[in-house]
Image (cartoon, rainbow, N blue to C red; front, side, top):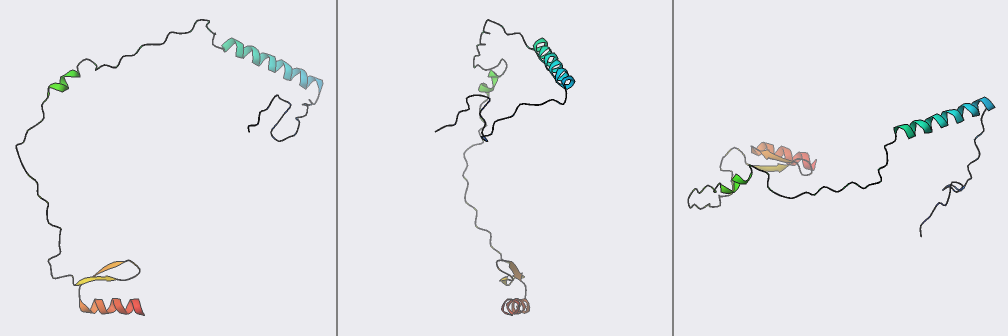
Length: 125
């Protein structure tokens, strides 16, 4: 179901708009004069409405001149080759003894046994 407004006397808030009251007859005359001048200006600057419809331009999809040379460039042939999967990187040094968890999921590298003991005491109190 849709709501249709059927005139200026109906509104969406359900209240009728009251008539505007001017402060004096001079104010009313001046407002009417300004309104008339504004309508005259709008008419003088409005675009003229042509009675004939403008024909639509016809566009064609084609390759612009000078761009058709790209089809003549062959792909570069580097020869036959194979690619092998590399091994997963793995730490082979002796500096880091392990990885500890300081707080929640904060991973900390452990370099000595003393650090491992300190971190375990921090976690457990």
